Length: 164
Image (cartoon, one colour):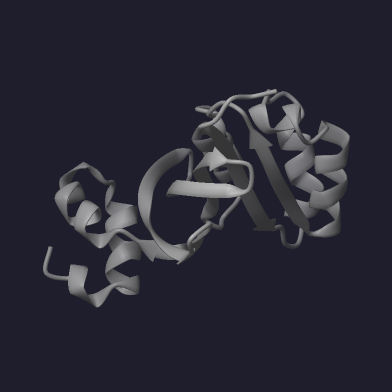
């Protein structure tokens, strides 16, 4: 039995796949060794893609540093931006979470950016992670390190960033 505190690392991807990409993406990924295939078998992932939506949700006892690169690889073959979420949930006791950190991973054309999210406390035992609640203080502080395509998207989403 694990001793507390322990951290659960959660990963989430919900990717709509459109048109010819439903057919072409599995072929493109055939030679790729994505870490997500560890939890989601390749053939099951391909079936989901062909059906129009790739869903990946897993919990691991250790971080998965390959997750952003997996999203970057997917983005190489798609026109759309690929987004996923990474959450580190610390359990102080069984069913008692005392700290949660979360990041959104955004990938486009083989590049990726990892942005911290604002996490709200729901009650004494749980937290709420909103994948659209970027920590704008951190984004402003790191602005110069982000690629231009990310600047453009964040300025559209958050008018307060247009002055940067």
